[in-house]
Image (cartoon, rainbow, N blue to C red):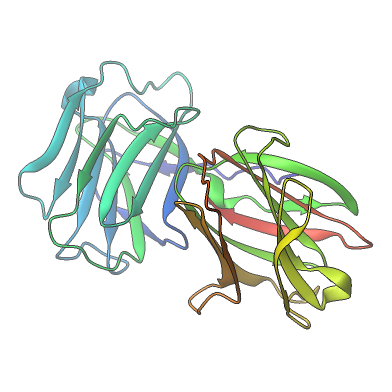
Length: 275
């Protein structure tokens, strides 16, 4: 069960409102006639360098990625990509020194470009302009609650990492799948299993491919932040901003499109996903 996503309004003055970026992918819904702008920066303000993404610019006819307020790195025709009549979902991934932008439910980006001078992105800003006002919903604002039930809740994932926080007594489980359900193949990641004493990576509900001791790795009273990456079959699990404590490489990697999350074995959970 998820809390209602708060709607954040923007006027037509083109001034960014900044927030901290916790993961590498930003998922959002926006309702505006045109000119939905997102900036990625090194702080809670416009910085140099800065990457800007324009969705539905040029009176709604085109979209672009721009670097340092200079020339567009890429510009594509996207007529009627946004509307003031309804929310439409998008995702932006900023990893591996490139920017990829796509529509919700579509894994092939509608535009992408390498960042000419890579930099550490810590914040994002959002705005509307050129006569348009907007309403925004950022999916990482959701608080997701799970019961003591080993049934996964699935979400699409457009990058190759997942940043999240979870508060639970034990057994925070993730599934990496090729669809919005349990699939074959599928990776499962158990954090704080075995009475909060071990963590493991399991393939296709079979044997554990890797298992390590992680005493008290999760906690009911504290939302602890984790990072799971899975590029090219290299699965790494750890606390955010630290070295992984669990990893395994699949010699036959495949495309991951969804992540499932759940708790069980006596535990309920409170989650925040940055995917």
